Picture 1 (cartoon, rainbow, N blue to C red):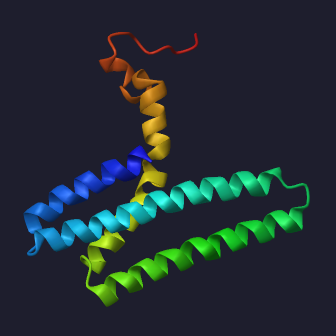
Picture 2 (picture 1 turned 45 degrees about the vertical axis):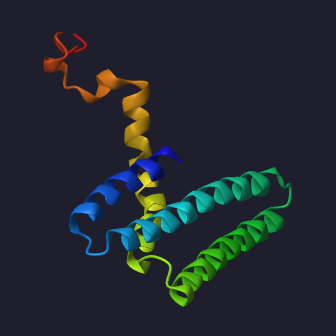
Length: 133
C-alpha cells in the first residue's frame, strides 16, 4: 500500500509540472490511487478467502468472482468520472497503474528494507568479498 501512495506522490509531482489543468489532474490521480488501494485490499482479502477454502473449484470460482467484481467497480468509477466530469481520466488510469508499479518494485523494496548491505557492491562495503577459499 505504501508503494501505491509513494508512486502517486511521484506522479503528482510530475503532474504539477506538466499538466495544464493541475486540479483536474490531481483529482483524477486521487481517484485512481483510491481505486488502486481498493483493488490491493480486495485482492488480498479474496486470495486469503480462496486459500482457506478446501475445494479447488470453489477457490477458483471465488478468485474469478473477486476479479470480475474488482474490475467492474473500477469500470463503474471510471464511467462515473466521465459522466460527472470528475478529474482527468488519464490521470486516474496513471493512478490505477500504481498497483502494477508497486507490485513490480515490491521485491526490490523488500530486499533494501531487510538487507540494505545486499544492495551495495562488496568493494564499497569496506570489506573484501569472500571467495570461499
